[in-house]
Length: 265
Picture 1 (cartoon, rainbow, N blue to C red):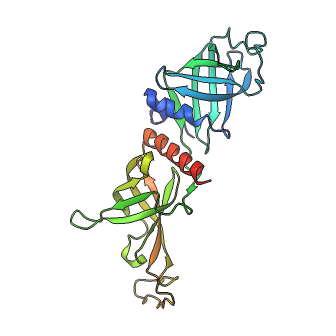
Picture 2: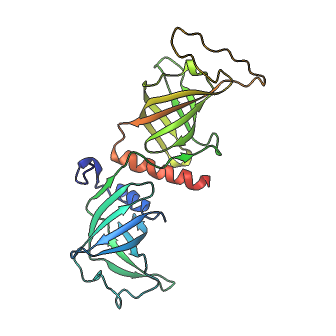
């Protein structure tokens, strides 16, 4: 069972906490706030300000109510409020804040404003949403050097989640690493979204085109013959899982996955 007090999941850097709070602005997030009397209220997180280190939120059923006149939860008089949230993709985010302040916007609407918490627990579930880049061929790239003296192999990223990545490469299956191989220092390039250096473990490799669609069942069995009627070059898929990502890297990568999925719609 994942423990929210585990140092692996605790974030204390303001930029990391802001990124986690940003996850909660996704409309599919589910956020509950509990007060000292263990009463619960569903809320929305509206945004976070990295300059002032404050974030903005309000009850989900706010509907323009006046906080000072209809404060059934005692939000303006309570002491401590605990946030228990399930963010986009299943990440668990937990933290607590003191009594919030009310802020009014130019359009007359209001929200609650709280400073960033001292620390925030972001508990990563390994089975995460996977963004497909099938319609954005070439947008994200990866490269890996088999040995210091060898030329890097370039891949295109086909799909990605915090759990793992699917890569496509113009090579035959026989020329690629086998299942179980650990790929050191794989460079993932997400364009304007940034880059990540990671260790990957190969989970599957299979042909896509330009080579036999089935592979030999044993090392002593000859490879099946294949004749390409269209002359297409070999193309293979390599699926791998991330190894040794820390909480900060997972947090950043989840933001990338979200943005890739959002722009791919």
